[in-house]
Image (cartoon, rainbow, N blue to C red; front, side, top):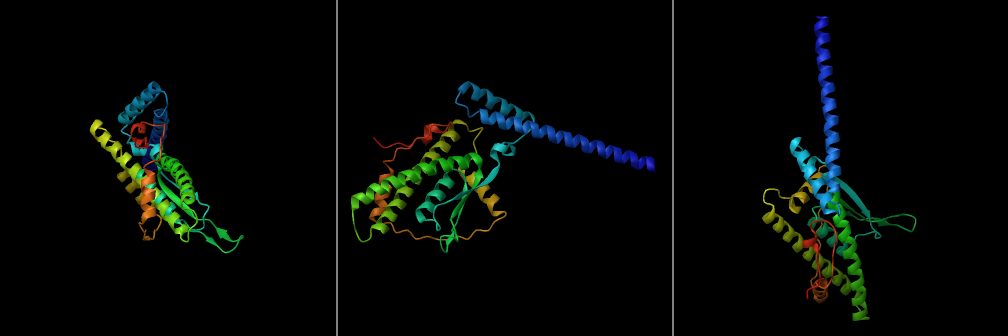
Length: 264
């Protein structure tokens, strides 16, 4: 009886050891695929193609799905703002660009009692790291352009009693126009990919957004807030001004679609 129990324990220990070693091997293979996928974004076309082909070969051989690779893991990124309350135009820009790039966004207001007791507002982005980096890249460009053009518009309208409200509406319009252009560019890209690569489609932004949203809401609660936006002359002036902004991002295979330039 004792010998039988010893034999059973030996078998289970052996199985556990084999499974453990197999798991380590799979982790090493996944790390190798992750490195290859990063190399596939190289500026050298030949090197990028070789890395991509090798990564696909390994994924097929070991039946590894793309979402299992580290480069596609969903993460959180917290952005601390200089405001104690998040302005509407900032919320709209972050929300629009996050969705376009397949990320989920929530915002949290801070508070201010005095100079020693205060907390700045923050925005939390959830999604794949590459999607968050895309979002942050375009956020920097958009916010810089909005501030620059709003300053010029403020000089144009001069002194007036409702200047603050007019500039706020103008910022909102600029943000709306820029996000609409980005949405149109991304839709064109996904349509292009659907036509050219019908057997190997990328995960579309709607699916990535849904995955990021589910990941965040799994452990967090969110309260929805409706915001009324007055669409007046300044708002539509901002929307029209957004069409003049020249945006270009010289990286990745999406360049041909994501180049946003002024109409000729």
